[in-house]
Amino acid sequence: METRSVRSYRLRGSRITRSQASALERFWPLYGIEIPEGKLDLPGLFPNSEKIIMEIGFGMGEATALIGRDFPNDGFLAVEVHFPGVGKLMARIEELGLKNIRIMETDVHPLFEEHLEDLSLDGIHLFFPDPWQKKKHNKRRIINPEFLALIAPKIKTGGFIHIATDWVPYAEVIEEVFASSAVFEGGVVDRPEWRPLTRFEGQGITKDHQVTDLRYRKIN
Ligand SMILES: C[S@@+](CC[C@H](N)C(=O)[O-])C[C@H]1O[C@@H](n2cnc3c(N)ncnc32)[C@H](O)[C@@H]1O
Image 1 (cartoon, rainbow, N blue to C red):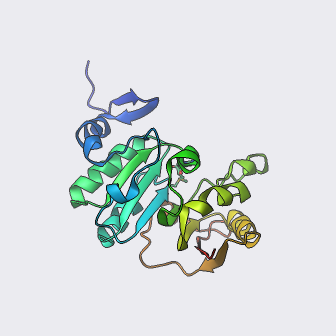
Image 2: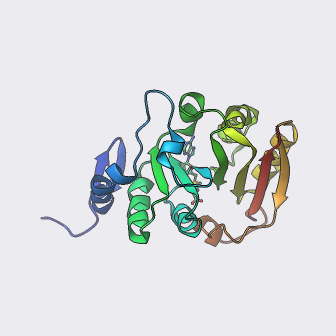
Image 3: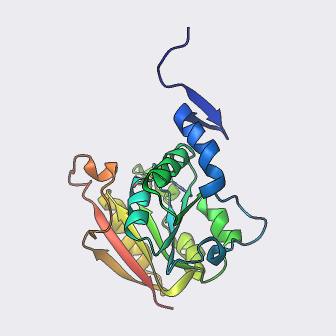
């Protein structure tokens, strides 16, 4: 018997719901960007945008859509390796009538390694990267010296990376990693009003779960 519970589908190795699958079919041609053979033509994708900002790991895209709405003059390349959020974000983009967000489903590492032109990004948003709290998993954290070396050439001089984390020990590591870089300057900043609350921040705040915002500018 057909049940009325949410059916899930498997697509590109991920389980997604029926509504996500139908959003994907309708909206991917409008908002999705396939990984190109060579370099991504970012100015071509965002011809009218003052700034081009990449968001790494948008999750379900709650913050992405609201920031896109609030900054219509900027273009946002939203990248997520985990598939289910893609359909959700596309549905939100459609609902809000946004024209300035494009989505890629990929790990950002190969994107930075092979598909971005140098000095092509005005900024990067990295909100609540996986904290990998256990010591044996710390090495999986996305922010490390190699990652800084990977992203630095792609950011314009004067461009930025804005990071938020709800894991204090990770915030401390992020500060250390950036402190040893000659390319970036900055540090902990007040929570900016433009950054929407996501469910991570809605959860109970304990000592280790205080939210820290960090912002770094590329100085050379
Ligand atoms: C803890 S979640 C935060 C999601 C979202 N930014 C938010 O604030 O709700 C971290 C996200 O980063 C994504 N992610 C982790 N590593 C990634 C990578 N190398 N490239 C793209 N996305 C990545 C994960 O799939 C996950 O959705």
